[in-house]
Amino acid sequence: MIKELRQATIEDLPEIVKIYNEAIIDGISTADSKIVTVDDKLEWFYTHNDDHPILVKEYHGRIIAWISLQPFYEKLLAYQYSARINIYIDKNFQGKKLGQQFLSEAVEKALDYDIKTLLALSFADNLPSLKLFKKLGFKEWGCLSAIANIAGVDKDLLILGLRIKE
Image: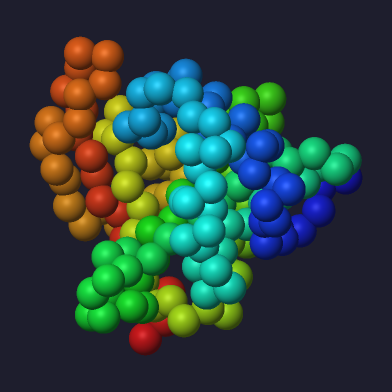
């Protein structure tokens, strides 16, 4: 049984890191190029709070997806109502139409926080991610051409945005 999104706890971090490492190996959804450890992600975990949480989705007691809402340019007050959203799904649960359900829930939850604008960053060749975000109303707001080099290949990074409240 798939449970509702809930805020992650430190005990969830090993499973969050496992799913993230799958994405690193996959090579299309993150610019990280080397496997990370739980220790590597501790500081990142603790930058999240009640207004910018990491949310997890469980299936039979196992985390199968996580979504983070990170402050966007956190040190600049002008961006205080904007957040970057990330979604990662366990490889065994990808392609089962769960991403849309999970992301939709996360956008709905974001309305409860002090967030007006969500931003997503996606490589231009990550078609499943682009399709997912666009299905939920995210629009392409910009492109950083050939900004990343992964395994010797230059990649464009698209900036997608969604205004969720005025």
